[in-house]
Amino acid sequence: MPKPGFKSITVSDYVYNRFFETYEKNRRGLELKGITSFSGYLTSMMEETMTKYEVFARHEPFMEKIDVEQNRITVKDNKKDKIAEIFLRDDQLYCSLDGNTDCVHIGFVYSLPEFYNIMTTKGIKISRPAFKQPKNKLGNYTF
Image: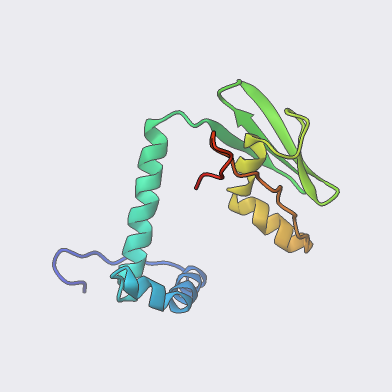
């Protein structure tokens, strides 16, 4: 029976073990953030997820993942009202909409966990594009 003000939930052993392993691996860093227990870690993860969903729900998403296939990820660009297909070409991601390897659609794909799952499963290492640091008027790099 949980303490007053708390609730119990039931999760599969698989889910529990994944979260517990991550907690154990990151325990020192989490303690620096004030997270000193596994239940505190789970609570912080749930709060963080809820915050992300609440922000996402308030704003129409700029981009949406439509489909993930073996060699292609389809993205809807709501700003342009167009579909972009991102696929692997010569160990780099390529955008069919912009016709290049360095655009916002590819940046969005890099944020998708599904992308990394596919690459890991296939044993593919992706070389990310080198982004150039902008210079200010004096010719110095800005940070």
